[in-house]
Image (tube, rainbow, N blue to C red; front, top):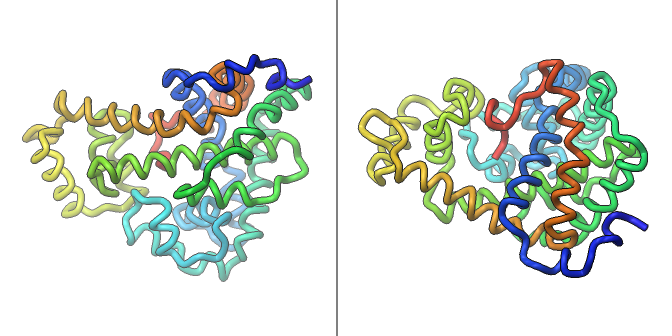
Length: 297
């Protein structure tokens, strides 16, 4: 009997508290993010002929979409400037998307083995018994990156396969977040300016990776100031902090349905089960939380 079978019916049908949604979302993001910092990713990209970190990141993350033009990646990623994403032109000539996807899985497996990110077989099986019905039951309407990742065949390595299922739900939340940003009138640059104003992300790193220029960044700052979300010095106002929290809360509300197949108890249990993945990277200095790096939306 799986952990899911042991859950009472009410645990899978009752409304999921938003604190449980927030907790499992953070755990999922933490267990996914090491791939963007692990040296194994850079090594695998170099083996495919791409040594620039920016295009390599874009290729790895969008490989599940297939050989799409950079404009499609730009649309799916939302908060990058066109000049940043245009730099990936030619990555599918270096290697087709399926080779990038395979290289990504190799990087994940190698990084996990190096860092000692292991789950005992019983915990790994339990984690899969919880995440698999979440992925299988997900409504992918409007969830482009999640749908693309859900279509990828799972690798034979059980731990990497779990990581890919984690990736599906991580991108699902990201896709949902973009809908909320747009609904709140926060464009691709505006959302970054607001986020960095909270102090949760370093501005220099965000600007280096997303590549919005001074004019564009200044215009976004002016728009947020006009809404009362930043003051004259560009500092976050109480109204801006409330707006940022509202965006996060609305994203959590959107994501509550995703976790319905396992309910709050299952979501909290899954968060606990996958915690060792992120923990394995912290001492080695190869992992930072989403609040410490310019992670994808």
